[in-house]
Length: 400
Image 1 (cartoon, helix red, strand yellow):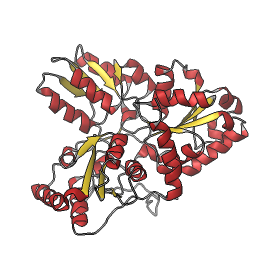
Image 2: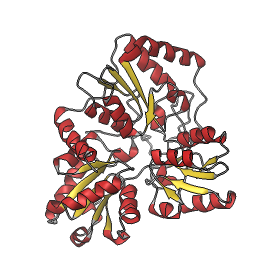
Image 3: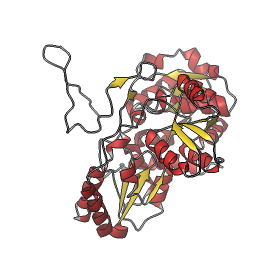
Image 4: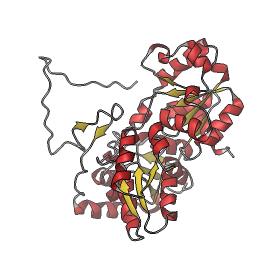
C-alpha cells in the first residue's frame, strides 16, 4: 500500500515554502480554476543539462553496446529523446522491447506503468529499468487495486457484475491490468479503444472503463453512437461510487473518475481562442481531452494518429494540437521546414511534470551504473499479477 503524507506546520499556519536550486522540475505555481483538479499551469522547463552530461551519456551507452536498449516516450524532453533507440507511445515501446531479446537492460524513459508493461511483455532474462522511480502517472494512480475491488463488490451487490466486462486503458498499473484479465476483460490503447469496446459488448451488456473517463466517454459517444445518458461516472471516493443501484443498472458505460492532468486542462475556450487567433487552423486533440473539447475539435486521435496526420497534411496548413507540449514543440520544429504551422492548443505552457522527471542527469546515472555492473531502479511485476495482466494484454492483441 502506498502512503502519502503532507507536511503541516505545528501552529497550523500556511507553510511559506520557497523553491531552491535543488527543486526538481519546478514547472510553475499557478493553478487554472477551469481545468480539472490536480492540473497545474507550469512555466518552462529548466535549461538543457550540462554538455558534459551529453558526453557521459554517449560514453556509457557506447560501453554497454547491445546490452542496453533505450525506449523514449513521445512526451520526453529532447535531451532524453536524443539517446533513445526507438520512440513511440507506451504500448509500441513495450512491444519494441519484447522484440529485442538480446538486450539485457531495457531502459524505459517514460513513467512507471509503461515500465511495468515492458516487464510483463519481455523475457525473464531482461531487466527493465526506470531512470527515476518518482516518474509516475497521476491518471494511473487514480485507480488503485483496493478501490477497483471495492467497485466490483458494488457492482456485484447491484446484480450487474456478471454482465459487466472491464476494459482498462493502457495507462493503468499492472494491478489494474491484472484485475481486468482476471475478470474477463481487455486492455485498450487510444488507437483501438473502439475495437476493445465492441469486443467487450459482445461479451456482456455493460463495460467498466478504467481509469480515464474521457477516453471511455469519447469512444462510446463519438465513435459508437451512444448517448451521454448511457454513461455514468463512478467516483471511488464516494459510497457506492456516488451512484444509485438504478443508475448502475441503467448504464451501458460505467466510467471511472480518472483523467490525464495534461489533457484535462484543454477547454472549449482554448479551441475558440486559437480559432480567433489563427484563421483556418485545424484543431487536433487527443481523446483523453474532455468531451466538449473533443466535440469542438476538427480531428481527434492518438499520439501516433497526430503524428501521421501532420505528416500527411499539405504544405501551408495550420494546426493547433491538444496534447503534451514536448511532442508539440518537436512536431512544430520538424514540420516548419515543410511550411506547416504547428502550435500548442492552449496559450499556457503545459508539460507532463511526472514524465519530465526523466531527465539527462537521471539517464546518465542509470547508464553509468549499468555500465559499471550495478543494476538500479529495476521494475519487476510479481508472477501472479504478470500472468493475469498478460492475459488482458493478449486479449487486446487478439482484437481484429
